[in-house]
Length: 280
Image (cartoon, rainbow, N blue to C red; front, side):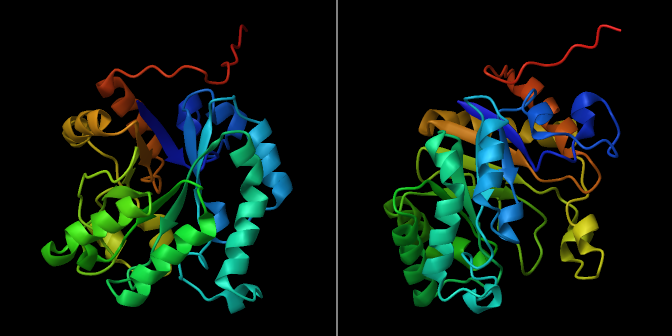
């Protein structure tokens, strides 16, 4: 099975052939694609009522990739959020996101680790602690430190993810000296995730005040999209699901690219929300 989704739902007016100024609702988004990546928990864990609302607003088969809070990925320490420990933050995250789990709508928890999360004994032990904190919940790991992919560590890294039942997040992103991981299309469990960030090298390397608006400013060409097809098709034979998430939305390109890839793959999604038809 192949699924496609975008990062957030409100910024993709092109799904309705409308401009970026038009903010989509989650219900509207779910008329077109079967999953979405929810990024807001990275900055602050949403309320239980928010997760309840999102679960209720989507069709039965719709699913969410929920980004782990920045304390869970050690971007910040627990004291910055007034928490006593990392374990307390994990417990709060699990408690509030429980409505998605109960509805069968949690595809996975995305643990996107920072570039300074390198190959150390401490970090390997922390990944093991994360699995203990999360219990049996599905989770996916995205590294942004290239050392994990060096030849002397690569197979050990993949083995660790397999033992802990973490999905390996396959990324396409600019290859900067720091803060990037290589494109490495290998799955470690029954869910393979491809996150496509674009290839804007200058924006990715930019650490200025406008980096958020430049980092994912990229529109994949038809030939670039076509280059992913063989790996996606191979991964479908090795896993139960391949989920492709487009994160190249600084210029509003993610939705158009997702629909183009859907056409290239010959996909037709079922179980979506019914599309509203304007008769007049």
